[in-house]
Image (tube, rainbow, N blue to C red; front, side, top):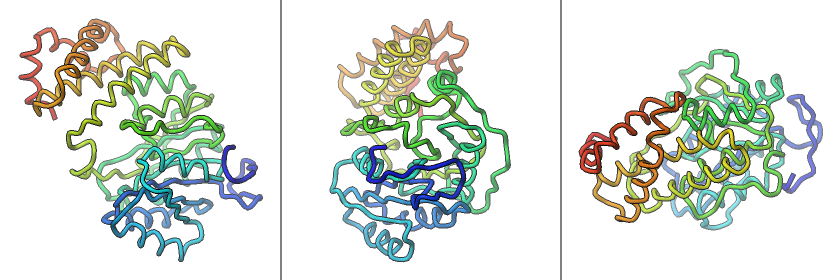
Length: 334
């Protein structure tokens, strides 16, 4: 399994080999403002057969003290401190230490619904799926919510990826899901040193799965912090261009029937980045031209493809108005 144990699990909730059924990995970097609430939401789970690996990425705030306090009172939590290397390296460290049949990830400023793990495990074990992804909400009103039992949508890999790449379902987040640890083996990991590592990883992580389930219920609560990466400009935002280029290359090579869907996801990324750079008057001329090339190359396919969402079709049509019109449009972009 590529971890530090030789745990072998059956299909029941109770593990008989001394290993937990579920491993959760939490990368932490200066999250002291939110971390206690995150860890408490995990301790409040109705399903308790888990281990939590908190991977500190070189925090200098109260994160270490908060985690150490929880570890002392709850043996299911452990802290590792590999030093600063970024979120991908932190998650990979946790993967390599994981012992559970199932593995998932939680961001240090988010929270789980109390029934999140129980809901995901039940679906995995009743549908024979190797992956189960749940719904999420922005905001942290998780204790007042109920998880209404709903039948999961169970798909094969191609169907699930088509839904994700056309952005009909959000399946690319590393949080709010559980998957069989064996899918990752010793070789599939988050790519280190890049942003948008989740978008880069999900289609590779799930590639060995024959059944992927989606639970249409909110089990994960996402904190929309204004200081987060997605709410400000940084050079790392440009990484999405390489990430989606690699996605198209991978699908074209290994799953040709998903190539067009991957191209639509690339179109969306390039279009959104171009509007963002235009609105903020930032980014290099080379990067803007790179975006424009993909927009012009893919706009007719976006218009013709019935699976493309309306937002992308409208963007494709708008691109015929030229750069000046797109810059005007960017002022309305949020």
